[in-house]
Image 1: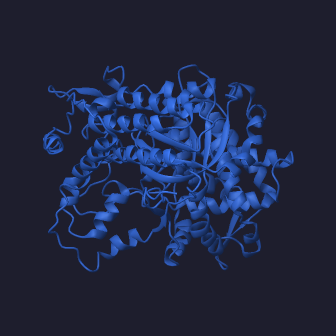
Image 2: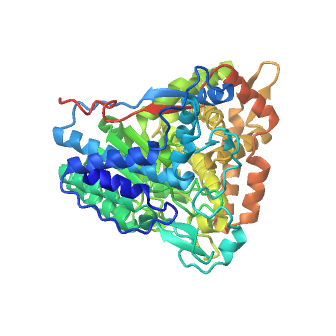
Image 3: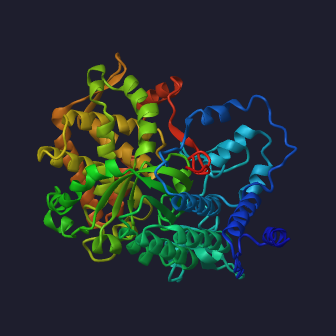
Length: 578
């Protein structure tokens, strides 16, 4: 009865003004999970019509969009986990599901009313994959009738708010990563902290994290889970970021909360909720330990004047490989993340460093089902022999490491690069990480720390550009890949043979052009030069017709653009005893 009353009570919350002070009194973990399931059902599916008809053949356009994805089971070897660890992972997965609930609100709004209007299962599935009616793999093109363009600010800001109005309003926390903007009773802009705007899912998620902490066999991980639970309740994330950097002796891990700012394409200020539930691959992680010590040396060798590399990256750098057991929220929307570099907090990075997590099982899924087929179509046959998973893994790993290189604060002392470059900062940062990651590969290869032929790293790098470009130029990663592709093409690193239908890589030009573009991006960041950054993105961050023609060939051949998951505790094999 209490649960039914709770569900009915929530159904009448004014969703745009969630200022309630609900404090769930939960005495047992079963109650938490039951309440979690009921809340999720009401939020995501209560408006889904049971009597709606589902046509045998969905609309062709919808099916074409669905065909961009290939489904994979998100599994890993969990046989070595203790019963406590298994129970803890199940709790973490339940907590992660609430990041889905919140991200729907940040991206679009409540999904129920939208899903209620859709009669066929295929279209509903596409909406769920994209967390809204805009195709993330097609530059956010709307795929439902009557739906206009996706707001640049997603749902973080009032739809009628202008940039000028935002800039002129005196709210001190308007640029905070953790506030929503809405209008008050007088029509003026007002900020609402995340934990007040999303009171129920954040408190239920934090309760689950606290229960998981009781089962943690690592004291550092238990401490982090409690700190992260506090952060969800109060939007004070920095201390939990520091705590997470001290987590080193655990097999199970979770990244959870508002993290990346890609969804906010108006300013790039607002962080989106997401979660990854992770299982460490200890053998692969051990192989990576030796690379972290080179970070300060690599920073000092960057191809820019001394002023642009004066910041010293934190030395507490950790490289590890993980298998993912569950994705939720922002990281599960559209294209799926394959590596993580966190925390994003610049102060934490400078004081202590970051952790780089390589999501090995998902990388392998993408390499086998997407990258190899792309290379067999678009890469010179004589060069396909150089496409290797170890090179793909290394390029991806050092991309994440390279986020810690360069400069975080502008040289004029006026603030961070992120603030100066606004909505363009993410695209430039991703471009920097791609290039400096390959720069690191080259430097470590020259030292003998990385084995194999550099042609393997270069060729796999180019093939990966084609893979990532297909995510669309609307995303930060898409813009970054297009800038690099167009720059490389214009400077002779790659050339296309129209008669033969493939690209050839000119290895002798690679290192020099890579250095030139790295210098350009690092300089723009250090200068906080928004105008120059805007020109670079508008000139090169676009898919031109000649390239689009080749990308269309990949679609015609049925090569998927990305993956979607069959996932959960059952899929991961966690619901049966050892």
